[in-house]
Length: 90
Image (cartoon, rainbow, N blue to C red):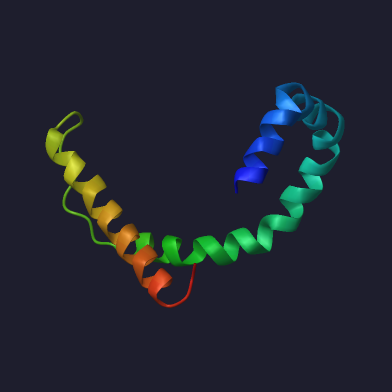
């Protein structure tokens, strides 16, 4: 861990920027394409969790009670994350 950090510091920001400029543009598109299946597999449990939620009724715009809906989503997603971690998902 410490060796990695020192290597990053030694290389500096210029190398990072140069590698992005010279290599990144050619790898970005193929990298995104290659990641589609992994993204779907990783995100599907969370999308299913959100789709299965029954949220409290929405209040008028600006009503602080709408934050309760955000909290409901957050609690459900965190519970799913913890369940997946407990099942060896990460």
